[in-house]
Image (cartoon, rainbow, N blue to C red):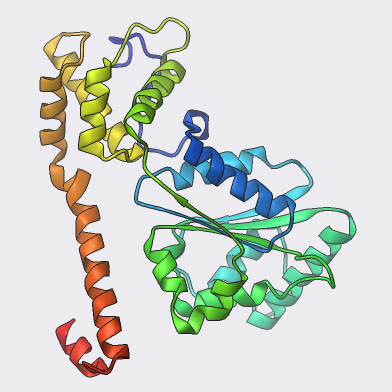
Length: 308
């Protein structure tokens, strides 16, 4: 609606994870480097964690576009699957076809192993990237651990990248997942942007969205205000900027001031920007305290279940 008004070719603040808008802050570059290192060195497992909207999915899409032709990739973005559904999706992503018959777990793994061995023999690599991995069930995570057993005497045949929210680290810390957790040697936790990076991020997206003839600017003071409201989370920055541009358009102005930013934040809702993350953090803190009390014998599991 407002793109032509501001001299933009497209909306630079869409919430969709478009790789061409990837802003490589030092922490985003480091996350990308961890992915590249883990794959090229055949480390087996890579773990990238970060809060909601910090840019994990955008990094993963950009990473897949960077892979050369010698690497086959499988992307799973719907992590609410069973263990056999996971194997079916992996095989489908790699283009592996089963002969007629019931797709049992044994047959699916056998077909995947044959594909990976053939790949390795021809000098190729294979990567499985799972987004929103914090939603994986314990049985599926155990199945993923078993996939890491597909290897030669010296090399991992399948490189597995898990991307998820901070609670994924807590999940992997469970005693039942100890074997999986110990196999993850490449890890990185993606932090939010600082105030200066928020300014650079907004400038970066405006430049891509408008091309060479950009007429729109966000003053430094406004960028600091946006940083405070968004807590440096790229998705929240996008939401605020998108709403602010719409408000400025309806007001018939080309300048963005603090009044417009405040209105944008109020329109979006502060619960969207801050409340959801604080609520999740508070819930995780409660669960951690309960787990400590149970392990210490101060309360019992039945008490916890009744509490929940």
